[in-house]
Every structure is written in C-alpha cells, then in structure tokens.
Length: 466
Length: 141
Image 1 (cartoon, each protein chain N blue to C red):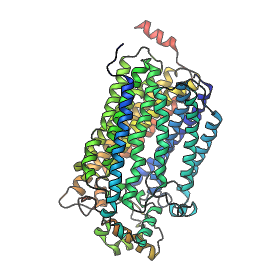
Image 2 (image 1 turned 180 degrees about the vertical axis):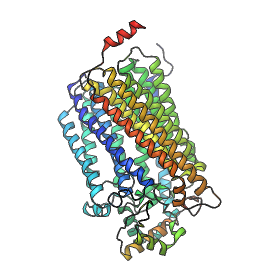
Image 3 (image 1 turned 90 degrees about the vertical axis):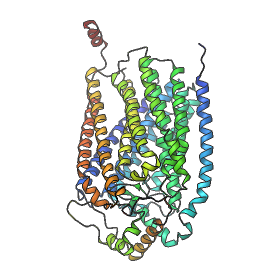
Image 4 (image 1 turned 135 degrees about the vertical axis):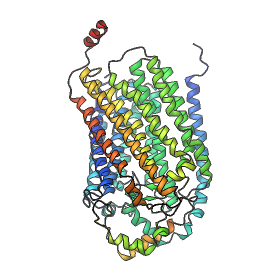
C-alpha cells in the first residue's frame, strides 16, 4: 500500500468479517424459528434473534465502509491519514459498543433495557434497525464524528478527486441522516415518515453514493482506465440515484397514513430507481472491456463485476417488483419485502464491502494479490454465497406469493398464521439456502488463511503453454 | 480531445439535481406534516394511547409484528387487529402467552398490568382508525 497510515483499515476489515459471521449465525437461528417456533424460546425469542441479525449487518457494513474510507482517502488525497491513532481508538470504541449492544439484547429484556438506559427521558428505542439504547446511539454519532474529522482533515490537506469528494461527502451524509434516530414523534404516522429519512436515505440514497465511490476506486486501480472517464460515469450514476430516490422515498408512504398524492409521486419516481443500477452494470463492464492492464487480483475483479449485477437484481429488479402502488397494495408487509431486502443488501452493500476488502487486504498484507490457490477459494466462496442468496430471495418470493394469493387478494382471506403454515416449504428452502450461504462464507474466509502471494511465474508458464 | 459531455457537466447535473429534488421533497414533507394529524386523528391521541405506544415500542412488538405493513413478518398485522379481534380478545391473548403449542411460533409474556393492557388496547384502537388509503385489503391484515 502507498501510505503507512492505510494500515488502520485492516482491523476494521477483520472486525467487519467477524461480525458478518455473527450476523449469519443469528440469521440461521431466526430462520429456524420460522419452522420450529419453540426453538430457543424463551431464552432467545425471535425478535431478539432478528434485531441481532439486522444490527450486526449494519455494524459490519459500517465497519467495512470506515475501513474503506481509511484505505481510500489517503491514497486518493496522496497524503497520510490525519490521525491513525484516532482511527484505531475509534475502532475499539465502535467494536466494544457493538458487542455490548448485542450482549444487552441477548441478556436484558428489552423493556428493562429501555428503563435502565434513559429511554423515558428521550425515547428512541423500538423502531426497526434503531433498537439500540440511547447511549449506544450517542456512541454511534461520536464514532461517526471521529471518522468524519479524520478523513475530512486528510482530504483538506491533500488532492481532491471526485472519488474522494463523493466518498467523504456521502460519509457526512451518512452521519447527518442518522440524526433522525433521536427524533421519535409520538404521532406514529409522523414517526414512520421520519424513519424512512434514515432507512431510505441511507440504502436508497447516501449508501449508493458510497457504493459508486468504492467501485470507482477499485476499477480505476484495477483497469487503469483514465480517471476522468470513470469519475464522469460515477457522477452520472449518483445523479440518477438522487433524482430518482429523493422523491422516490414516496414508495414507503402509500399505506402508512401519509396523504394519497404519494401514491402517484412515489410510483413514478421510484420506478426510476433501478436506472443507476443498470448504469452501474454498463459502467463496470465497459471499464473491464477498456482495461489497459491485467490485474493479478482476479478475485477482486469478480467481486467488482458481480456487485453491480447482484445489486441490480436485488435492488433494481426485486425492488421494482414491489415499488408500484397497485402492486404494493397486495405485497406490502410480506416476504416480498424480505426477499428484496436480503438480495439488495447483500448484492449492493455486502458485496461492495467484500470487493474493497478483496482489493485492499492483499495490499495491507504486503502483496498485490493473493496466490492462485487463495483466489480460487475466495472465488468459490463468491459463487456459493451469490447462488445461495439468490436461493434465499426466490424462496422468500415464493412465500410472498402465497401470502398475496391466500391472505391479501382472496375473496375469502385466510388468517396470517394459517397462511404462514402453508408457506413452510418456502421457509425450508430459505433455511437450506441460508446454510449454503454460511458454507460459502466459511469457504470465503478460508481464503484468508492460504498463504502465498500471486506468482507471475505461473501466469507466464500458462501464457507460454497456450 | 474535445468532449461534448464533460465530467464537470455530469457533476453539475448531480449537484443541481440533488438540490432541486431535495427542495421538492422538503416542500412535500411540509405539506404532508400538516395533513397527517387530520388523517390519523391526532386529536384522539389521549395519554392512554401514548402510554400504549410507549409499551409497544419498549417491548419491541415490531420485532415480530407489522404495523401498517412495517416491521417483521413473523406475527400478524397489528394496524387493524383491534377491528379483527376486539379489545377483550387482545387483552386475554397477551395475558395468556406463551401458548407453548409444539412447533407454533411463540410470543413472550410481557407481564403487563391490567392498566397497561388497557393502554395498549387504546393505542391499537387508535392505530385502526388511521387513513391508510384503504390498506390492508381486508380484515386479515
């Protein structure tokens, strides 16, 4: 790596992967509880497994984004990180806070946790993905401010590239968009409306900018394509994201108490939200075709190309399926949403995180790429995880179809629990795919423990033999 | 090389587009904010309703249930449960959890007092009167 201080990214990436494992363990537990409702009850009720699963997801992705920022910003700015020490202290604070939070979920009944953490003074607990006690939420803000201070000071004293500006700008956006977590109106409809500022604002807005910046960085480094071309594409993509997504947030406002004009506005604008994902596919493959070098890190290239495709499928295609108001009328609050959520989160954000880790980790370990053997394990992990996640999405879609037919659209609708019973085969398929995903994750992690760096001699031999 | 469409132009579309559509969203939000209290009968948000909401939040009910389709998909929709089941059933149901039925999805017992149960029911009743553009499609939620 080019700057010594980029090394601080390493602990962030390692922690991200460890938390990823934890996330999947809780996912498998929750998935099994769909089938065996008494599994681990009452010690670990479904809602605790569920919030542990989602919170671990968010924390590991944030760890990965932070590691990415500490790796990318110094290199783009062509100067050392402002304070590597601050980055390391912040790492331990964030990791400890995260571990404490999960422990609190597991060992303290939620209402009691709220009582002992000052929730009555400023209520913030009880919304999805925002289950954290107030002190932890404050801790998250402090961790974010530390990151922002560090990377902004680095950016100020160094070269400002479009990648850098978009990345640091969107990290500021990430932090600002978290602030509504402290605003929990007593009016449920207003509370829901504001909740989406964080959730939609992040995953259908701000985080897409981060994704663009990360992919742009990786492709500049790996293909050698002119920066001007890459950065122009990234600006077009992020422009489309905000043009479609800022009013497209209305696709969350159809049936939760907001005025009915959102039915038209949300449908029209959110229908455009797949566009940036289509552009991302065109962009990444165009850069591949225009490449001026054969980078030895084939695994990272696979992640960089796979991310736009899976992101398009999960966010673009599955998202489009449920975005138009007439369709959503029947599909709202069903496993269609879960199918979309899983495939989109993995396809876009988990995969771009694994892409930057794939590119940067070898460099952090002192080589341009891992050995052929290590890359084979990594790529096998890629395929197993990708195919398994598609399996999860298809299984949940099946369940969603049953709900729509029997519970929503039927002339004589069946009660929820009865319908869930009819969907068991899909929950089994989901769990099977989930186990497959976990296997893929383990295969992927194995690749880090296969020693050796990329051998150009091997490539030469193959080229001569051909 | 002469370019028709430059990076600077792309950046300006990004910045201009962001500002323009953010302004539209903020204007719509302002209007929405005025209309919500009418649509959800905010004047009927009694202290009991608010206490009930606090109970629902701090017991993480949306960790299994949905409210107007938002939450987790493990247990039934609560936005219209008041109309589907009525106050007496709801209170009896909550008090008698867990069912312990083998294999059935389990709900914890939250050890709510009779007053707390009444508050929770008041909130569920308030929820069932929100104008959600005719959602859900039927009583099953």
